[in-house]
Image (cartoon, rainbow, N blue to C red; front, side):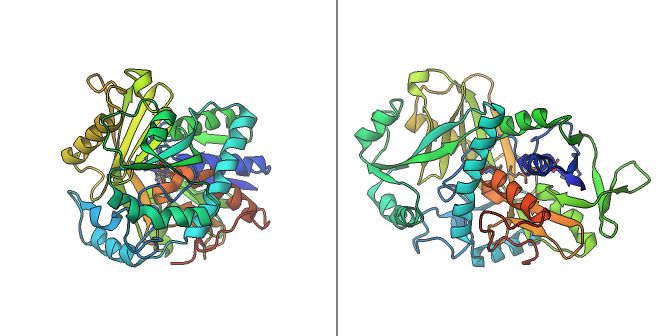
Length: 408
Ligand SMILES: Cc1cc2nc3c(=O)[nH]c(=O)nc-3n(C[C@H](O)[C@H](O)[C@H](O)COP(=O)(O)OP(=O)(O)OC[C@H]3O[C@@H](n4cnc5c(N)ncnc54)[C@H](O)[C@@H]3O)c2cc1C
C-alpha cells in the first residue's frame, strides 16, 4: 500500500520503519526541518518499565490510594492555561488508565527497540538498570503498593540499602538525603532523539521518503489523502496514519473526530559530564520530587515538572531550580552546570485517560498512533509494530486493550 504518515517524531519515525518493513511504500510529512524536533527532542529517555515514569496514569488508576507520585496535585497551571485545560484536567482526574496493557506494551516495545537497534547497529546511548531513590521512610511506604504492583506484573524489583545503591552508582553523594532505594535491574533508558534520527537516516531510500518543511493542513477519507500547505491538489494515498503528537486533535476536528488531548509540559536540562566518577552510570528517579537523572553518553539529563498552558509560556524558574537542586543533592560535581546548558520545555501529548490512541478510526483509510503522553518513547516501537500489524490485517502480538482509537 501507499501510506502517508503525518509527523516525524519518535512515533512517526518508528511507524514508518515498521510499515516499510512490511513492504509498504511510505511517505512521512513533517512540518519541521528534521525528525524529533518537537516532543521527542530531549525527554528523560526512560523505556520500560513504564509505571515509574511521572504522568503515566490518570486519576483513579494508581495502584495505591496514597497516590505516591502526587501527580494530580502537582500539575501547575502555566501562562495561557484556560477553560480547555481545566476541562481536560477534570477528565484526567476521573480517568482510568489501562495499566496492565501499558506495562505489557512497554515491555514488548523495549524488546522491539533493542532488536531494531541491534539489527541496524544504532548506538542510541542506551543503559540498563534504574534506581528509585527515596528521601524518607514515609515516601517509601507510600510508594510500596506500586512496587508490589510492578512485581506482580512481572517486573523485577529489588529492595536495596543506601550502601548497596552507592555501590551500584558510585557517583551518589555520601551526603545525599537517601533513606532507601529500589533497583529495577531490567529497566532501560536511551536517547530518544538520537534513536529517531539514526533510524530515519537508515530508512532514507529504503522504501521511506521523508518530506520536511511540509505542513499538512487537512486530511481526507474516501479517497484517503491529505493537503500540504502551499500545494493546490490533494496528495492521494491508500492510508494516512496520524502521528502528529499535540497537533493531532486540530487535524482531526474538521473530520468530526474529537480527541481529549492536552499538552502536559515538562522540562529537561542537559549538561556535559564534569567528573565521570561523580555522574550516574544509568538512570535514577528521585521519587518524591519526580525528577529523573539520566546518563546519556557524555551528558547528564535532569528531567521533571508538569504544567498545562501555552506552548509559548515562559520557563518556570522554580521548576528549573528544583532540577538543579536534585542533581546537586544526588550527584554533585557530576554535571558541568556552569557552562552552556540545553534547557528544554517540551510537551507530553496526553489523552484524558493517560493512554494513547492506536488503530483505525471511523473514517476509512485514516489511522491513529498518537497521544502517548509521558510514555511516547517507551511505547513507540511497540505501538508502531502493533499498528503495522493492524494495517496488514494481522492480530498484534501484544494486547492493545483500552487503547482503541475510537474509544472517545
Ligand atoms: C520533560 C519530558 C520528559 C519525558 N520523558 C519521557 C520518558 O522518559 N520516556 C518516555 O517514554 N516518554 C517521555 N516523554 C514523552 C515523550 O517525549 C512523548 O510522548 C513523545 O515524544 C511523543 O512523540 P510523538 O511522535 O507523538 O510527538 P512529537 O515528537 O511531537 O512528533 C509529532 C510531530 O508531528 C509534527 N506535526 C505536527 N503537526 C503537523 C502537521 N500539520 N504537518 C506535518 N507535521 C506535523 C510535529 O512537528 C512533530 O515533529 C517525556 C516528555 C517530556 C516533555
